[in-house]
Image (cartoon, rainbow, N blue to C red):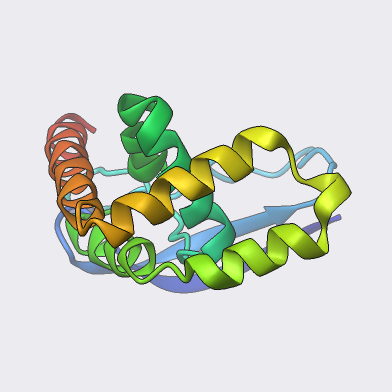
Length: 155
Ligand SMILES: [Zn+2]
Protein backbone atom coordinates (compact mmCIF):
# COMPACT_ATOMS: atom_id res chain seq x y z
CA UNK A 1 0.00 0.00 0.00
CA UNK A 2 1.29 3.40 -0.90
CA UNK A 3 0.19 6.84 0.14
CA UNK A 4 1.46 9.97 -1.51
CA UNK A 5 0.90 13.36 0.02
CA UNK A 6 2.05 16.88 -0.69
CA UNK A 7 3.65 18.45 2.34
CA UNK A 8 5.45 21.64 3.19
CA UNK A 9 8.81 20.80 4.62
CA UNK A 10 11.74 22.87 5.79
CA UNK A 11 15.18 22.12 4.39
CA UNK A 12 17.61 21.15 7.15
CA UNK A 13 20.52 22.76 5.32
CA UNK A 14 19.29 26.09 3.93
CA UNK A 15 16.18 26.38 6.15
CA UNK A 16 13.92 27.32 3.22
CA UNK A 17 10.47 25.87 2.94
CA UNK A 18 9.39 23.86 -0.06
CA UNK A 19 6.58 21.59 -1.16
CA UNK A 20 7.53 17.95 -1.41
CA UNK A 21 5.81 14.78 -2.49
CA UNK A 22 6.08 12.48 0.45
CA UNK A 23 5.76 8.79 -0.19
CA UNK A 24 4.65 6.46 2.53
CA UNK A 25 4.78 2.94 1.33
CA UNK A 26 4.20 -0.40 2.90
CA UNK A 27 5.99 -3.07 0.90
CA UNK A 28 4.74 -2.40 -2.59
CA UNK A 29 6.26 -1.25 -5.84
CA UNK A 30 5.34 2.05 -7.38
CA UNK A 31 4.93 0.56 -10.82
CA UNK A 32 4.40 2.98 -13.65
CA UNK A 33 4.65 6.05 -11.46
CA UNK A 34 7.29 8.67 -11.98
CA UNK A 35 8.00 9.81 -8.49
CA UNK A 36 11.37 10.71 -7.06
CA UNK A 37 12.59 8.28 -4.46
CA UNK A 38 13.31 10.93 -1.91
CA UNK A 39 12.37 14.60 -2.02
CA UNK A 40 15.20 17.06 -2.21
CA UNK A 41 15.39 20.79 -1.68
CA UNK A 42 14.85 22.83 -4.88
CA UNK A 43 16.99 25.64 -3.45
CA UNK A 44 20.15 23.82 -2.44
CA UNK A 45 19.62 20.20 -3.46
CA UNK A 46 19.87 18.68 0.02
CA UNK A 47 17.96 15.46 0.58
CA UNK A 48 14.99 15.63 2.87
CA UNK A 49 15.56 14.09 6.29
CA UNK A 50 12.82 13.06 8.64
CA UNK A 51 13.12 14.30 12.19
CA UNK A 52 13.30 11.81 15.02
CA UNK A 53 11.99 12.98 18.36
CA UNK A 54 14.18 12.00 21.28
CA UNK A 55 12.74 9.14 23.28
CA UNK A 56 13.82 7.98 26.73
CA UNK A 57 14.55 4.48 25.41
CA UNK A 58 16.86 5.68 22.65
CA UNK A 59 18.52 8.16 25.02
CA UNK A 60 19.29 5.26 27.38
CA UNK A 61 20.91 3.33 24.53
CA UNK A 62 23.02 6.33 23.57
CA UNK A 63 24.10 6.92 27.17
CA UNK A 64 25.17 3.29 27.52
CA UNK A 65 27.04 3.45 24.23
CA UNK A 66 28.74 6.64 25.41
CA UNK A 67 30.49 4.50 28.05
CA UNK A 68 31.42 1.61 25.80
CA UNK A 69 31.95 3.25 22.43
CA UNK A 70 31.60 7.04 22.33
CA UNK A 71 32.21 7.18 18.59
CA UNK A 72 29.32 4.84 17.91
CA UNK A 73 27.15 6.87 20.28
CA UNK A 74 27.86 10.03 18.30
CA UNK A 75 27.17 8.23 15.02
CA UNK A 76 23.74 7.34 16.39
CA UNK A 77 23.12 10.96 17.32
CA UNK A 78 24.11 12.03 13.81
CA UNK A 79 21.54 9.59 12.45
CA UNK A 80 18.81 10.95 14.71
CA UNK A 81 19.52 14.66 14.22
CA UNK A 82 19.04 16.58 11.04
CA UNK A 83 20.55 19.76 12.37
CA UNK A 84 22.55 21.11 15.28
CA UNK A 85 19.47 22.40 17.10
CA UNK A 86 18.06 18.86 17.32
CA UNK A 87 21.03 17.93 19.46
CA UNK A 88 19.89 20.29 22.16
CA UNK A 89 16.79 18.18 22.72
CA UNK A 90 18.80 14.96 22.92
CA UNK A 91 21.17 16.66 25.33
CA UNK A 92 18.27 17.62 27.60
CA UNK A 93 16.77 14.14 27.61
CA UNK A 94 20.15 12.59 28.39
CA UNK A 95 21.05 15.07 31.11
CA UNK A 96 17.67 14.74 32.77
CA UNK A 97 17.62 10.96 32.73
CA UNK A 98 15.78 9.60 35.77
CA UNK A 99 18.02 6.79 37.01
CA UNK A 100 15.62 5.81 39.76
CA UNK A 101 12.84 5.27 37.22
CA UNK A 102 15.29 3.37 35.01
CA UNK A 103 16.21 1.11 37.92
CA UNK A 104 12.56 0.51 38.78
CA UNK A 105 11.87 -0.32 35.17
CA UNK A 106 14.76 -2.82 35.14
CA UNK A 107 13.49 -4.42 38.34
CA UNK A 108 10.00 -4.76 36.93
CA UNK A 109 11.17 -6.52 33.79
CA UNK A 110 13.95 -8.43 35.49
CA UNK A 111 14.10 -11.47 33.27
CA UNK A 112 14.17 -9.36 30.10
CA UNK A 113 17.02 -7.09 31.14
CA UNK A 114 20.55 -8.16 30.40
CA UNK A 115 23.33 -7.83 32.92
CA UNK A 116 25.21 -5.40 30.69
CA UNK A 117 22.39 -2.86 30.92
CA UNK A 118 22.35 -3.11 34.71
CA UNK A 119 26.12 -2.64 34.97
CA UNK A 120 26.11 0.32 32.60
CA UNK A 121 23.07 1.89 34.27
CA UNK A 122 24.84 1.74 37.63
CA UNK A 123 27.97 3.22 36.12
CA UNK A 124 25.97 6.08 34.61
CA UNK A 125 24.16 6.70 37.90
CA UNK A 126 27.53 6.79 39.64
CA UNK A 127 28.84 9.38 37.18
CA UNK A 128 25.67 11.40 37.74
CA UNK A 129 26.17 11.29 41.53
CA UNK A 130 29.77 12.43 41.10
CA UNK A 131 28.49 15.20 38.82
CA UNK A 132 30.72 14.01 36.01
CA UNK A 133 28.08 12.92 33.56
CA UNK A 134 27.13 16.34 32.17
CA UNK A 135 30.71 16.96 31.07
CA UNK A 136 30.75 13.59 29.30
CA UNK A 137 27.49 14.37 27.54
CA UNK A 138 28.85 17.80 26.54
CA UNK A 139 31.88 16.14 25.00
CA UNK A 140 29.68 13.69 23.10
CA UNK A 141 27.51 16.53 21.82
CA UNK A 142 30.60 18.45 20.67
CA UNK A 143 31.93 15.50 18.68
CA UNK A 144 28.50 15.02 17.13
CA UNK A 145 28.20 18.71 16.21
CA UNK A 146 31.42 18.49 14.24
CA UNK A 147 30.17 15.41 12.43
CA UNK A 148 26.84 17.02 11.54
CA UNK A 149 28.54 20.18 10.29
CA UNK A 150 30.83 18.15 8.07
CA UNK A 151 27.98 15.99 6.78
CA UNK A 152 25.63 18.87 6.00
CA UNK A 153 28.39 20.62 4.11
CA UNK A 154 28.90 17.75 1.68
CA UNK A 155 25.41 16.39 1.38
ZN1 LIG B 1 17.89 23.62 0.96
